[in-house]
Image 1 (cartoon, helix red, strand yellow):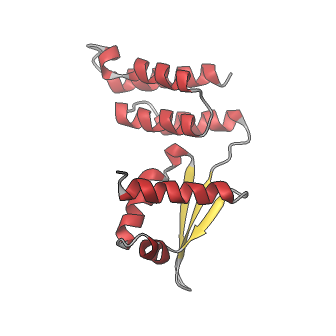
Image 2 (cartoon, helix red, strand yellow):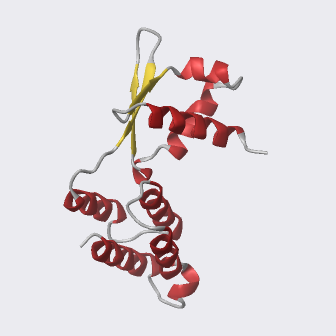
Length: 151
């Protein structure tokens, strides 16, 4: 049985797919009522499932009942996408942080499933072995692979 967070995430993604301008406006309290949950559950889904790593931006608006806008980042130029990813990776990245970026690229169809699996295998702690600064090496490898894929 799917967890409530997964159900809410799927519901919001379906709404976004139906909306052609890649932006969705929702009221947190109404959504919480629909799923019979606390508004904090909606916040949890938004902050963990709709992140910039996964290609989303969240805006909160107060007043008039308040609402939340979920925007899907549409990268028009591959160069700007590579710049954004490189900035997010930085000089060092944990395995979990790398996986978030890789999964986000796959979910947005920027990379294939095969590319996703290959990249995950390369940045895995086990693959990096006894390297002293795994997070730095992982960041360098991840940036290099992304550059090759988008070149």
